Length: 408
Ligand code: PMP
Image (cartoon, rainbow, N blue to C red; front, side, top):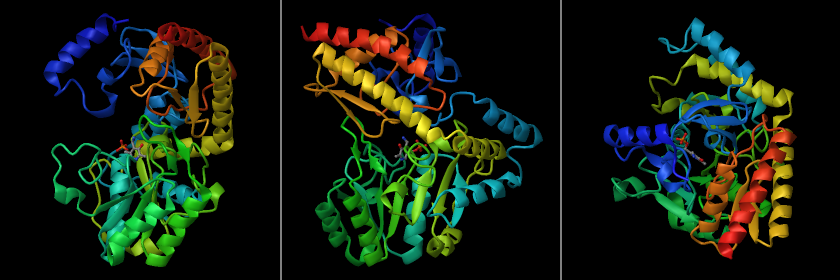
């Protein structure tokens, strides 16, 4: 299935007006056939493309939508603040309210500051860690995504070796490789940057081994390096107090964005007391960082997630989907792997290194009105109800048939 009329026309116009038609991860060229590039509307767990076709949404805008698109309580709060004043000469009172709320809610946090994108937040974390001890080296897991700035972007195009000079790599969940990288950094170790679980593009997700998380904590305690948890993708979907709270491991700094304001542009950095002075010493700011409407949206989002036990609801719907998919794959005799937390599902097919089976599966599901991803983890929201999951499973059953037919 080719995309329909308006999408094609928009793509042709975009190809002339925008380099490459679009930037980064939202380019539709990398998606299975039939996937739209442009969307016109979103509500709850549904999205509509530019040609008016409706889909059940399992990407949630790549994470930001956690309560559902256009949540009425979040939008009312954001609208009221926008009418009163949004981007002004300084912040609105809601800045303090939100900083207090985040600092109370996030277990490791003694303070909170704000920015716009996840990349801002991870960059501020690294800068604060370096400011604290005057050290330079940062350990990152090979293949992990932490943003699109020169120091961390996955592409080296247009990036200098100097931009990456102080990064050292370890393997996720591999304590020996972590210790090896730390030894290489020696006295110059500023920080260990780590994701709550391994959610790299195109590979099976891996939950953090508790022993690994504890080893990261011990290493940082021993060396004085800062433990930075990148909560940008997982934050507020696993545990509202912090994704490593169930493991009993607290970071020194954490980067947040995506889900904290249910689709409004906002990022946050939370930190421990010992980094407060360093955080106040760095120069980090932006014209839109004090935008008050997104902060009002965040207050409403965090309160509602707590009130409705959003994490448990997303997990339950994720498990309903996962159980259904597992049963269907078995019935069709197709080997699949479902990895990571159920509320952030990843579905990969066995013997499918180029994700061709995955692409065929997703293309058929899309034709049946269900928007999935064949190589990236997906996202559940609080707006997904049992009947939505069951509707999605009707589509995926046909999609498994398409895969079975393709395999012959
Ligand atoms: N860290 C992680 C783990 C992410 O998933 C992302 C975004 N996909 C980022 C950082 C960067 O966030 P942003 O795109 O908002 O800059």
